[in-house]
Amino acid sequence: MNQKSLLVEGLSDAIGFIGGALLGYWIGRLLGLDIFAEGYGNSTIGGIVLVGLGGGLGLQLARRWRKRQKANEEN
Image (tube, rainbow, N blue to C red):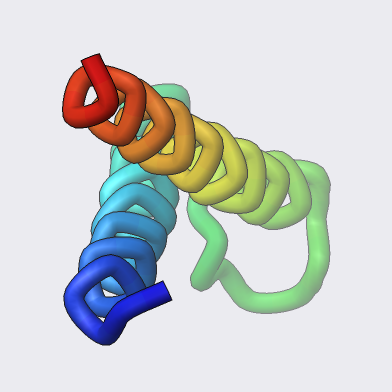
């Protein structure tokens, strides 16, 4: 792997993860779930789960995008 492909891989993973986590956070806020609430109540745990799921899904989308880009370059 060259440095450019490693940079693209790292940046796309980071952008996908952060974007997905933020999306999960804001969906949680719309549903009334607050990850920063005091204690570990149900709404806090639910918000944390949404942030984690959003980050994971964003990361997977970034990896699929990269895979599709690589396939397009080969064709």
